[in-house]
Length: 279
Image (cartoon, rainbow, N blue to C red; front, side, top):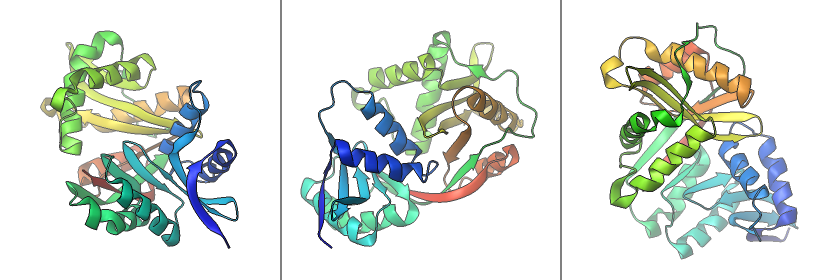
């Protein structure tokens, strides 16, 4: 069959929506991007999505942005996408997707892109669609803008620990602070405080197809080891299911055994495996 790789248009973007709807947890981030594109009044095309087509039918796709995300890719499609990525050179900060897809795509382009800063080869994707059986922490609440000054350094600390680079390096502080402010005003940030200090925090990073993806889970080092995280996450799950989405998901590094154990206590189950290549 004849095949081609090209940017998506209005017709093929609908095919992509149907594709990601079949795997709502796996493609939560992509669904959120598609929803954002749908509501934009200034979009003339979908150049940040590449499609692999057979006889005009979309079979695979690639999201090109700060994160490169392979979507339902076959080995043949990944080879085609890799050729384009090699020509373009690296413009992203990470490649993230299912373990097989992300790592194979990276193997195809790494000779021309150079070394990665870090490769996280196995990241369990966890999800739950019912409230936790654990008692919730009633002190966990939605953050307000009055929390911003305390929440911002907590977010910087968590991001730096998780990603390995500071989000405020090279003048990025104002933009990152604005991002935290946006999460607060859109009711996507949760906190527990004590005397004005952040004890626990978490955010909803993406929402799509009835799935909310949690990110940035953090317990203040001074309060770790006290069993705070499990009941706090039970609260996040409950509030998210009430107000945002019926399924709550997250993904975590395989080596972070304490976090995985906590999430399992809350009721999360492993449903997939991601990998992330960081630059």
